[in-house]
Image (cartoon, rainbow, N blue to C red; front, side, top):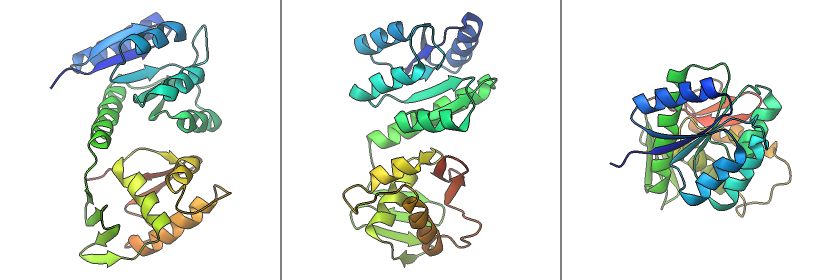
Amino acid sequence: MPTSTLLVVEDEPSLSRLVRDYLERAGYQVITTATAGDALRHIGAQPPTLIVLDLGLPDRDGFDVIRDVRRTANTPIIVLTARGDEADRIVGLELGADDYVVKPFSPKELVARVRAVLRRSEQQATPAEMIEAPGLSIDLPRMRVIRDGQIIDVTPSEFQILVTLAREPGRVFTRAHLLDAIHGVMIESYERAIDAHIKNLRRKLEPEPANPRYVLTVHGVGYRFSDAS
């Protein structure tokens, strides 16, 4: 398997070196840049496998970089920033970031998150017809959900939400992301309608809806599918 090339966009030299060293020890090829302009030139010339992106860049805001990348590519992006406010997290995820790491951070945890995002990206590139989780099977061609051997009746919207979450266990999806997933299935005008779909899905799917096993809440942001094995 070819080595993944990671682009680290960070203007603090000592932190850039720290991130590069840990990622290289983990077996990745790493390119570092300190500005948004250099990052976008690298991405245009030779798209990396994944981008680790600081938001506080000297020439442009990191959110602008995410916007530019997402216009042409689905390259995984992990935001690495001192901005820990809930609003910034939501904006980053809404723009298309795959994960959001707040400084100060553990370099080992960052490596683990890089591995997880790359693994999810590979799974997404080769979508399976069946999605499996402990005690749960999702049959995509038949739009069928089976839990512990029993078929669970779900609506088309509930099915699309479940598939979106289950394709990428551990990834946090905002309500707007999930709203996009059911676009064309039914018309929605209010993101909080997603909460109603989740509530109904848990009632049907979860052995204990009040203590969900599969569809988990990320308070202040949205939902994720459990990545517990």
